[in-house]
Length: 123
Image (cartoon, rainbow, N blue to C red):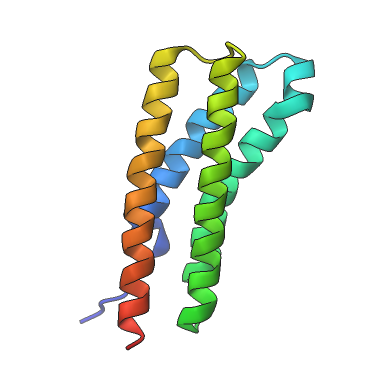
């Protein structure tokens, strides 16, 4: 029986892709100046979460995997920073801000558990 799980089926990856979709919608609604000043950095940070999860999952050695998962977590924290700024600058309202932070917090917990599980498999 095949126990291989595709990275696309991982909860951490699915949530990161969902966040990428929402961030892209926010980015598309920005004016040219906002896109240039902070929009590109915001969407790049969010997209980097899933990209690092995917790349880490494709690595062979657990330490190599973990390095990319840590990068994903760092991008997650950067993304939270941008969401706070988007709210402060009145680009997103409080309900969208709270919804995004809720998703980021869920992803943070799941990503930490994923990192822990990857470390435990190596023992």
